[in-house]
Image (spheres, rainbow over the protein chains, first blue to last red):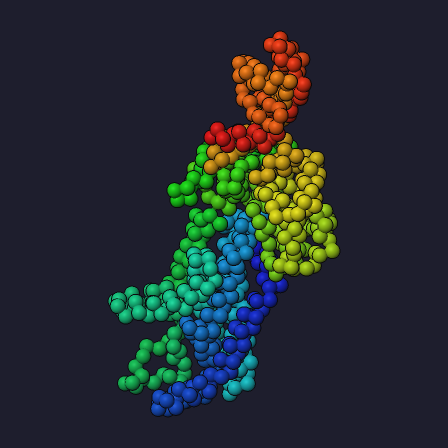
Length: 272
Length: 298
């Protein structure tokens, strides 16, 4: 595993495009987290609900900050899509440059080729989780009124949830990249597929909805019910999340297995 | 006993309705330089692609080194398939380092490989900036890493200038002299004739011939004949039972013999018929003639 990961790093670390895309990812995450209060202001001006405005004061408080930030980082159309794009570009490059052949000819097995990308997805997920942790640490230290050991650690399991969610998402991106082999098409699908799923879920039974792939991935972290939004008002009767749910995680892990299975199947069956 | 490095049995590959490789059988002995000859689109690259696990065959099987596990096999093979494949944004050195790691080599022979193919000075330039000849030479350099047992070269002189072709040929001969088995696919007959010990001829994925180059050159003999009375000579050739085929070339006949006949025998034969030869020369058949003949027959 270490050897395959080393190979991957040898391929990507000197690759300028990788650093540019990673830069965009980090920048948008930092900017988004730092700017969340302003965004809340913006929405509260439009929605006339004072409660939303109140949220701002609790946003960066320990322990809720872990849940708030990991949820914000996992929104399906935003920050994580940059990570998915990095994954897709790195995989489709191997087809554009035909280096997938080069890898196999020089002695990598087809399985090893896919496994090295899976390890890469796991590493990226770890780095992404670390980013959220660092942002939570810095913003919390600045804005959280009181810091105790208990409040600092108590909701950190949301970071673990975030890790699984990003991993599942990156494995989904990997599978798309291996299936279509072209960067443009794969990135297009990464954007379009979640939209398709939103349309599909309107037509199907409510019980099945959470089991659609992108929904399932996103279901680990839902709209947070942090200390603030613990009220119920007629207009605000949404099922908000208070803690991680074991079933959600199991479903996401099952999807990870499915994405890996399809990726391996596709690489074994095809001419390269 | 023969030491077989590679044996192929009944290999077939279809692309839709097109048959690229058609029930191919082949055996390659250790230490031979094996030329796979055929016109463009005859299935050479597809065959090599299958042998390197890049292309999936529809049927048949092949066996490297008497059946080693898949992964260890290819680490003992150095190969170029069609075009040089490298990461364009990595330097020549970085590319070879990556290959060393894939093969599980320590990587202490990278500089030497770059030296051999004359790229030492440009080793830190990105692959993207290399000329076609340099790319091709880097590809050859990559195959030399870790001293492979078998070298697979698919059209290694494609797109090179005459000097580049000569350089590559020298590298191949040098490698062959070290006892490394070489499998060389080419549509250039001259290249095969000059470098190979064995040859297989493919057309539309079918094997038309396989054997030693020597065998091809000796399989049938050609002689050049001319006489004062060319009409009488022509008539005599028509009736002679040892003659297979007659071609006219300038002011002489090129005659293919069914079996080897000595020059004095030939001379006597025609003299007895009252024909005086003014030109008689044995001609070693070139691979090209044989090749074209095979393609004509198929």
